[in-house]
Each structure stands twice: as structure tokens, then as C-alpha cells.
Image (cartoon, rainbow, N blue to C red; front, side, top):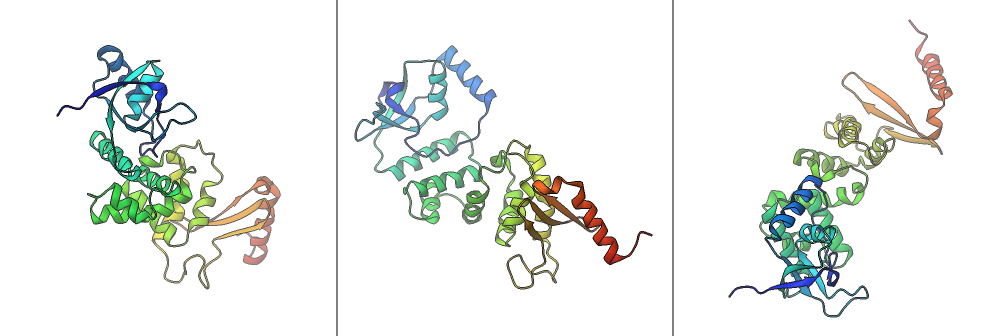
Length: 282
């Protein structure tokens, strides 16, 4: 039986009725999509379901799949859009349908998947991360499932702090997970703190690298942060001044951050202390 295509007014559709999995933007691809719609029309209908009641904004339908197509038609000031009317059994089923359709078109990054999982948990669509993972990504291998589960606390803590985290490689995601599990959260956050949110992904990763190296290659004599006898890796001396030690290939660096760190007198005091306790310059 052929699905019936409905032309539905754009104003009747709520594009955010479900948590969305794909959050990264591609201006070039969006432009190409709009040009294609202008020349050939919309080749693939979107998918919607009828809401139980009309919302205060006048929405009668919720979007399941086709967010980019709907956005393109809205930008082009179209009045309506071809749509297939679906009848999902539940909201979890609708979210699963969206994920399945998007995965067919273009793979979703692990970061975006976990962001979606957290949105679903916040909206009480699923009760636990494991329930969300098994429902939304039933075909994932054990390794991928374990990675998603391990990334949950990473995305919880660093989403909004990292620029373009959906572009991080699997190896880098695993490094972040391992460092967080080893207790290096405060050190990672401190490494990022001097940089604005708009800093390039490369700049941010270079700042994180020394902390990750220490976390992933600990010396046997150095207990993990937060455990008995752990080294003084990070200290906030007073409001406006934080000191963090950083591992390098040739030794250690002390990094001073905060408002008071910009004062030249701070470094002079440190140099005087070093000279006093370790001998004079040779």
C-alpha cells in the first residue's frame, strides 16, 4: 500500500516536539539542499505524527524526521511541505524512528547520540541511560554500547564547554572518558578555563593534552586525584588565583590562572621562593 503524502502547513508542525539527535550544522550542505528544493522541489517528504491536541502555538503535528528539510522550506518561506503521517505507538518509538531514519542518511556522532540520550532522560522519555541506549541503538555492538555508556558523564560535564565536540575522534573520546574516570575532572576544567567557548577545537585539545597524558600514563608513585596521598595537582590559593601543575616531556610547568595571575608580582614572588629554597642562580 502506497503511503499517502499530505501537504501540511509549516505553521502546523512543531519541529522540536522530539529531542533531536543531529545538532551540528553544515552551512554548505544546507545551502545545497535549499537550491535543490528551489529547482526540483522536495524529493523526500518529512515524517510527522498528529498530536493529541493542538498546542498553544497552533501546532497540530510533531516532527519525527526531516528537520533539515523542514528548516530549508521555512527559510525559503514555503507555505506547506509534503509529509507522511505516522502513528508511532509512543514517544520512545517516535524518537527511535527518527534516529533510524537519520542514521540511514548520515551517521550520527557518538557525542550527538549521548546528547540525545541525556535529553531523553531529562524529558523522562527513558528512565535510565541503559534503557535509552538499548531502545535507540539496538544494533550497536557491545563496544559501541560501552562507549556510549562511558560517554554519558563526559557529555554531562563538558557539553557546552567544548567547541564542536561531535567532531572528536573515537580515540579522543575514549581518552576523555578514561581521564574523567581517573578523577581528573577538575584539572580538565581548569585547563579549559583560560579559553573562551569560541576557541578552536585544536586550541582546546592542545590545552587538555598535558592533563590527559598524565591521566593516561600515571606514575606508580602518584595516586589518583581525590585519593589518599594524591599529589597537589591543582590548588586554588585564594579567590582569583589558581595554580595547576602540568606534565611535559622534559619536566613540569606550573600554570597560574585567575584574575590575580595577570599580576607580574606573582611570578616574581614565586621566583624569589624558588631561589630561596633551591639555591641561587648558577
